[in-house]
Length: 464
Image (cartoon, rainbow, N blue to C red; front, side, top):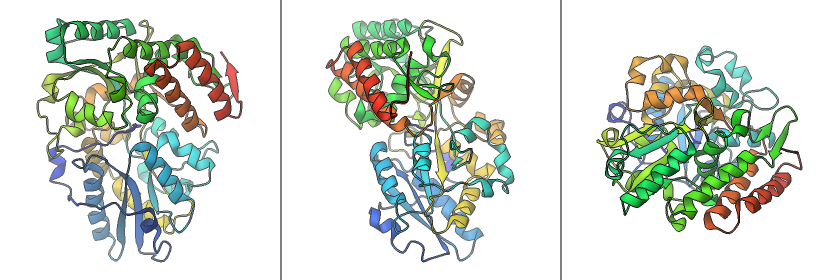
């Protein structure tokens, strides 16, 4: 759970009673490493804290685990070190911390899209010796395990859930537009047609949101572009990376078609104003304002959205499951399997320069008991990666939408998690942004991407 992007998530009230709410102040980078390595009884844990001050899901969850861990391990102390920043800044700050024993925490929250880059940089410790002795590791699904595996075959992180993506739509807006409230589009044209109808018949509403551009970061790449690209004819195999030649793909028609969809959304003013779309905090506005207030018709987004609307979130919206419908994102022309999703997620990893690696893994084991993992999946509106949780009726029934998004796992795709991917993702965002603003045609933006791809991958490119 993305990235999710990798979004920030919240828990339902049933979990609130099980966790201890604590207010955490974000220390500076230097504070993280102060005294690092000098206290064998203290484990330091860095994680991404929400930039929305009303969302405390990770803070509260970790506070509860900290209390449990310290009770079960007398004399041991847990120091929580939040990093309050948007995704791109979080990645930068985390990598700065990992470079030195003076600043490296003992445990870090790693986005799966970045983990191989950090493995290659030597920032992370392989966990195989620990995993071999941990019986719960057999409960994790293979696809989740592979997301934290390096090219050397070793595993560098323990996944804490995954996510899927689809179309959220406002039933009230659809009714006003004369569209069916059980809408299930079969092609891209069906999606665009619905957006055009909303634009014509429901003034004051943004018809369709597709995240775009560099300010949105991985949300643009994954929620936006890849949800299109992997639904093209070129998406039947991995459309970004050729595993046979071990090279990145340039010049594909699917890439141009995906860009053309983005261009259409913004050229026809079916999407948000360009200035809004390129606001790095626009995702927060979508969840906290546009959807709850009936100002957005269709939102191409992730499974985690309900965490913002549940009790205690600051953006409570108890009627969301009645007001919003869910539809799978269709493939371009209805090609089999007819729908597409992308999955990502986050892992807990131990830095190579951690002072207390053994204690850090012990903390992972506490977080990842079946009971604690299930609390987190529900709190985070995440998709379970433990088989025993996924089959538990209390998980499936915990929240509207969980079954819909869990069922998408069967038709989901995963990003090519190779070291060059973060740079490739940035090149995708630049191409999206240029067609969003109208600064470049689809052909020009695709050509610029091909050139950026060569630079990002040391010319390890195959022409489609």
